[in-house]
Length: 558
Ligand code: NA7
Image 1: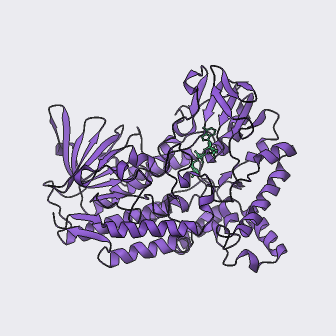
Image 2: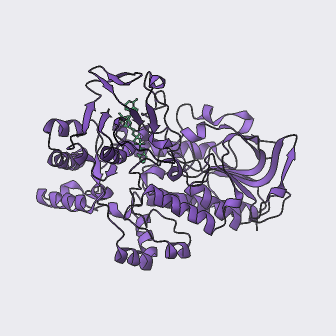
Image 3: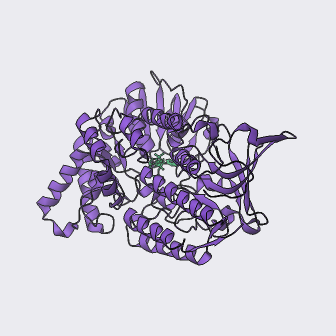
């Protein structure tokens, strides 16, 4: 069992008697603080308990679930098949849970994560409604002092940021938004009681995944929906359906083999099933057949059509043309189909969307599309949206404008490492990490699926479990050797950042103004944020690092 000399009993029973109230200030001394109680934070807590660390999780929301707690907009659902977008660490959990659809809805995912919290008795170490505001490293004690908006001041040996890649909504960067007198909604902060749009005129701004999933559902209720599109996105049909009992039974029987196969895939997602052959290795009719088969399979399957789809412009064009053809086939009005067809970025270089009935929604008489590249929004008015072309008076505006991805949640906390250097200052030119796990100058601070790791370019569940398992093994290693400090070396970080940039430059990704590039947030440095070297290559690297006594990290006693 590792021991860090925190002075409190080992084990998972961190109870309130460990928390002392002094002069209205709640303080506690812990082994570890975890920030965030989404899928990663909860699993992190479970594993840290397993190695005997006194741990507390702080969560800003009033419930667990992270992404699936906040994003309750109509139509919200996962775009990785349900059984794959689920924890693999507990065979019993996998055995007993029954998914009701191929792609689980937000409501079902939230039920699942709550079930996990109860099943593993996690709630007693999770403090809800508490936002972590600061974390400062004390070089004298080698401990982190973590502060919250509720006045907690907590000392912890380790601080683990399980803050999510898409958890901080982008500020509304449209003039006049506060003037609107009707109802305003954000997809990422949807009212828990739901919204009834019956009889209402609604403006939806934004056509990323959140817009594309919610627009068909809002259109079924509202009197009229006007969609304000700045950049058309590629969207692939989910082909969602009710749970297929035989398929789930097969999964349960062969889950180890399926999971291992997923880990051997570049994106760590089974359905992508990346073809080993490049575009040039196919005849034109074979290409066509392959893409048609994959379109029918649904979800991200099309992305695996050719091995060189995200590195070779011709391969990408072929698949992008195929999607544009499907759009023209579905959307009856050719001018609308044209406006919905992406032409300014290669397929998959902006996060592709997976939809149910999105394009077909534009055949409805109560839906219209405004092309903001032709008539940009001038301002929001008291009554609606004013573009350079017209005024659109509406009862409600739905903002589906995205997130300050990957760095937003970390930069929102005042994180101070050695010599008081802030993470925000260190990252002013873009995030710098070693393996997306740690940052030089910030000892004992870990990130789950941080920038510089495959994270959003993989099945998040796979990457979350991989990081949490790696961090747990690392802390056990330190404890076993009476070590209490681990820090990425500057040299290892420099090499990893250079490698990440090099790999990204061999792909088509940097061509898009995407949130992967930080391009969606005004003023954010333009840097490719996740790691695109692929899940197997990344796994090999971090396993090698651990097997070699945490190569690239400096380890020390307390
Ligand atoms: P996204 O994918 O970032 O989409 C945001 C959308 O909002 C996108 O179409 C943006 O257009 C649009 N947008 C953003 N700001 C504006 C302004 N100021 N005016 C007009 N339109 C704007 O966020 P989502 O929430 O849909 O999805 C995020 C991820 O969640 C998704 O990728 C999945 O991983 C799950 P732009 O493309 O920037 O021109």
